[in-house]
Image 1 (cartoon, helix red, strand yellow):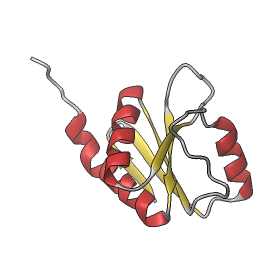
Image 2 (cartoon, helix red, strand yellow):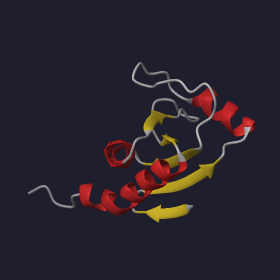
Image 3 (cartoon, one colour):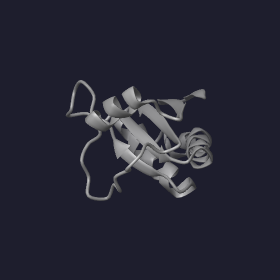
Amino acid sequence: MNRTTPGVSLRLVNRPSKGFWAILENRRATSSHFEEYKTPPDAVGLIQGTVAAILAASDIAEKAAAVQVAEIRGVCPSQVTLIAVYGDTSAVEAALHAVQDQLCNTVFSNFA
């Protein structure tokens, strides 16, 4: 799944490989709300975009399906530009579809 939504790029990784999992977990920001996985989940969704779009996408994803969302540190750790959506394949797919469908509804062009 490679999808284009205004402000974000979405990717689905089914059955993450050991190498992918090692890289991802090395870059995942530590958070007390995140339940650690003993083995990789069935799927991981990656959502990349602006800080505002990523924050909105994380909210949409967690409300849409039984997934966990985590910040993934990139080259510039002061900016959130990538999040990972963890869960079983159908839940991650549902979360990514919800982000794709709903993200444009969170954007306002005029605040007047």
